[in-house]
Image 1 (tube, one colour):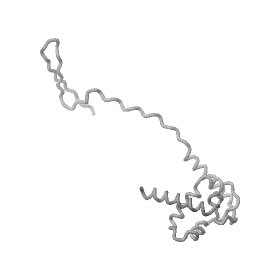
Image 2 (tube, rainbow, N blue to C red):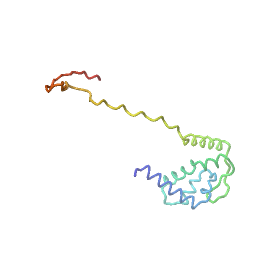
Image 3 (cartoon, rainbow, N blue to C red):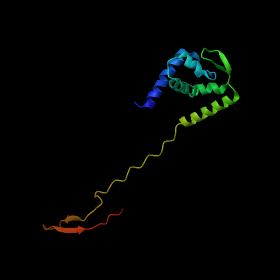
Image 4 (cartoon, rainbow, N blue to C red):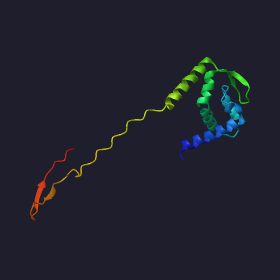
Length: 151
């Protein structure tokens, strides 16, 4: 498991714990500005980078961006109103949501690749090749064929 995978998994686990502990996160309501400070205070002993990764996953998910784009009040961790979503923040959330949908849109499948051409039955010669040709009789005739190899 790589460090990136470990960080991603750790962020998912912590975010699940946060959503169980704080219903405002589970409801995907717009969070107050600087909410990470409240989360740090609530989770003493948890590394700040883990908290930042978990909150980044939360605020960049489509459900949260939709709630932010609608506007309305912002909430603290206890679910109380603590500020408003500005028009600029609504616009930016709508742009982020649009970009996220565009990046997740199914891409057209590329045309099937043509299979590589089958090689001739004879490999390209790199030296003179001796071929035996049997005439109608019992005597064998030897022919030396020279071919030049083209790059």
